Image 1 (cartoon, rainbow, N blue to C red):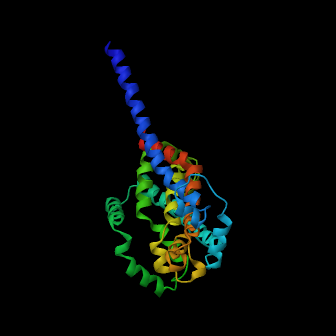
Image 2: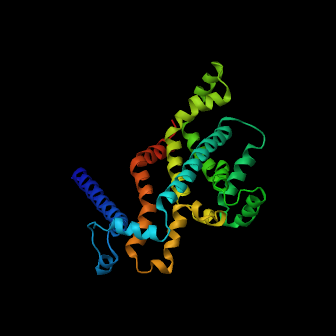
Image 3: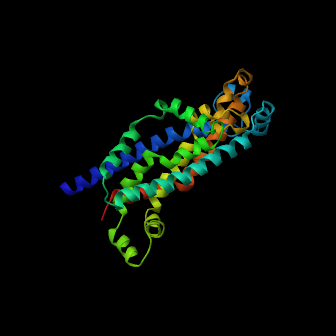
Length: 282
């Protein structure tokens, strides 16, 4: 009797959890779907009420954006260039730095790690003025490099990689590589980096999304309109000229969101695998 009661309680709890997750899924997806649908509707249709079915005014809305000087393909290319370069640099150098901290014993190792933790807790907004003046002095203002190069020293990414490598690193493989005559960088490239691929994918996805959505730094450092990223172009939609062009506004917002949705849809399984593999150490 107790066993049957336990099974019933287990099934009931699972059903309640699935119901709760389904509700949360609907709450999350409905606003995004409405955003995409409204991008295909006219202003008049949007004013008439909510609809879950797409319409046929997406080209008209796009022409309105073009007539106001909003170059979505150019903004998309700018954002993708910055996000892709930032992702590659962040993943590689963060993994390399974390590997050095985890695999080697050296004087000042604890101090270095504690210093990284302190940097993680300091908001970027506190140092943006000094960072901006530094970029101006070295001639990188209004330049994509000012947004890309700092990703080489991402404290939060190093912290994530260190926690992950501690869970998957196998010292015997490193020792075997040294016995076979591999260099230290060779061991990292041929042994550790492939072993940490799930974590690298996870970090890459989060980094790409953060770089794509980065508005604050780009707004401070980029001044030329032809270099505007997607978030910067989207913020220009709040002007008076778009006050009654709701379809065009939704199209601009959807254009900045859809790539992120695609990235999550294609690589979401790597996020789960990367976190789960790094959480358990044999």
